[in-house]
Image 1 (cartoon, rainbow, N blue to C red):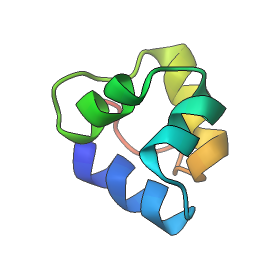
Image 2: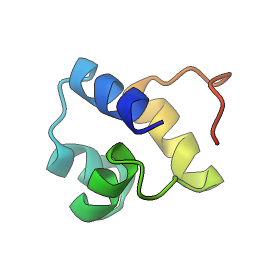
Image 3: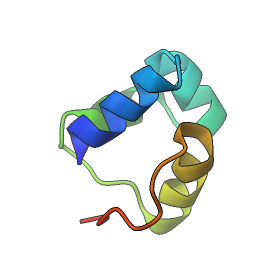
Length: 61
């Protein structure tokens, strides 16, 4: 999951701070997601789908 989020953030040309700001979370939260330390909750995932243009059918867990 973390690699998927990281690759899509890079494709969206966003830094971790930019992605965090757009998602309304801390930079540490984005970092934790990208390093598979935490998973986004459903509301966060929906925001990420829009920001990073994620595939809605991608398994979230």
